[in-house]
Length: 271
Image 1 (cartoon, rainbow, N blue to C red):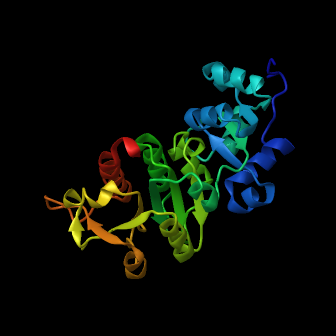
Image 2: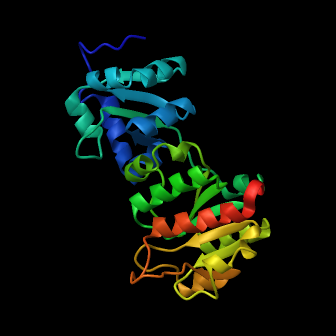
Image 3: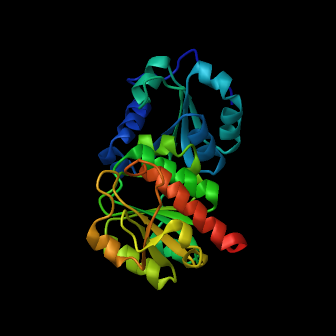
């Protein structure tokens, strides 16, 4: 289907106005949809069938012609928009000019457990969208079975998180559960041991190979405060990443990358 840029949608067009509302949590909840922006996220949304509508500027339609063609094959409604409409939809300083309205991408914890997972990243009260998205991307890259956001966390379907996953939100199962204790209990009942990352753990990560040979749910805490003592005590193991230099601590996503990698290495082909 050829796009008509003679009369593109503007920032006042109802479809654009409604799509822009998805940048806010209330709008996402009401519409039961969320917005993806940028090449990687939109490409994955279209390819996996999550996208319902595509919005694209004239320059973006040329640059990302393959996505537009795929969207046509996938029966995604594609709309030409003005540059100003793209700025209205965008959550970035400089927009790529391509957006997708998407069906909900989040899973339920019981549906994850049915798959007998061996490695899950659990973000407890994570608040930073960039870190949240990066951990989803890490989980996808390292072959983890799922990412769980537990407690009062950032919304995994918010624009900044979606963008920072670089499409991985549509590849790896992601769950959100506000009841931390219940969620961790379900993971343990499913045969996963709980490993908490703490500054003063009972074992160092480089000495934890035997522990990490078992299916594991890694608990990663809030960026500013880490895991609470209460949540850490719910874990089966409290593990510290050894720091050889003078740095006081590691960034959340960096710590997650190290821990997930060690689990993948020890689980081997069973992961």
